[in-house]
Image (cartoon, helix red, strand yellow):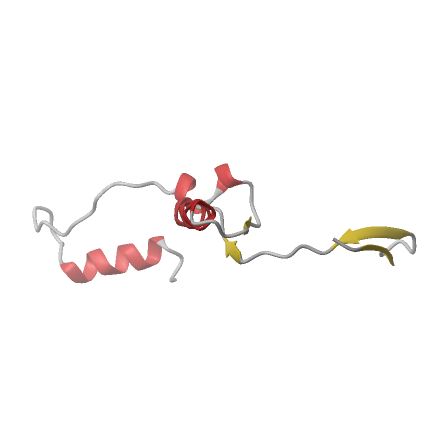
Amino acid sequence: MASSPSPAANGKAYTYVDHAYDVVVVGAGGAGLRATLGMAEQGFKTACITKVFPTRSHTVAAQGGIAASLKNMTPDSWQWHMYDTVKGSDWL
């Protein structure tokens, strides 16, 4: 791994290191960590990067549960269920 000085925002030099990986997984939620583990188990040199600490990932922060339109309350329909689901995901 090569390292060389580079100018930082404050004008001082800092050292950076290049890394080489076979696989880079973006996201350390449940799926990202599982993918990282699976690739590493297969012998790939693997890195997992995330913008948040793993215990703050969406998998951990998710409210969970099962929701359905049962028509046991008025008004209730699959359209309202879909609306609530999409709204709860911030329109993603």
